[in-house]
Length: 325
Image: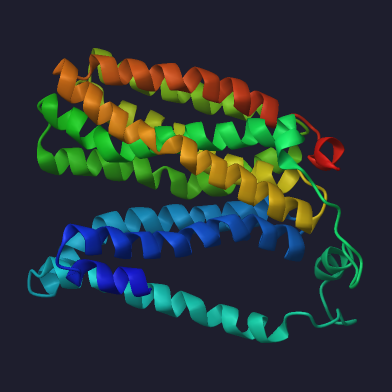
């Protein structure tokens, strides 16, 4: 909330980046903790609850993209106000967590949900949680690299797809709608995919299906970006649903709440570091080559290892089997 409020009024590049970093810190902490919260409070409904909050993320993302400009116009055309208003939503999001902060550490009662009691019993008070070395786990590394590559693909799509369509002759308004279609695809699929994934012993087949959609979308962007624009937008939107799948696998690849916490922190921090160069590299390649052929080739090339490591991460095993000291 603080970062979003300060950012539009920072006044210079350094302030903008600093306030953006502050806001992103909050987002990063939330991203790491949500799989842990799901595992703790809903251990028997990992797929359903991951799908629910992934769908909320997709809905929020697409809504912000669609509403910010009209909201700015309604507030008198001030882009600062149009961006700062989202700080209020972040502040409201804090409120539901306050009762849980007050109740932390309380013992489970007879009225507590069965799943909640089971989760709390995983690590009894005073007992040391098993120490894990994630760097020893092949599954943790596969999941981290999968997380990073899917994030790379998503950021490239969100950052550059509209420009690809614009350079192909699509109008600015239509290009914006195409990007919105890509993002909106995550709303229903982010709920469905985790539920399906949680029922499968191996999530690799879902990884391959999503990767195939991404490859088809990239091929379309290269061969006929304007002619089949709507189809490519849908296919890339489906491919971007590797994100809720990755979150689901974080909850499934560890047996305990502490294990999920360590795996989530490792996979997401490593994954986001991997994703940093992707969008920048696409811009450099576009500028140096003067077209989209080389950047699209890079995007296609990255999808292949994403499918490979996703298949490995989807195997039915846990990090406790590999990373216990």
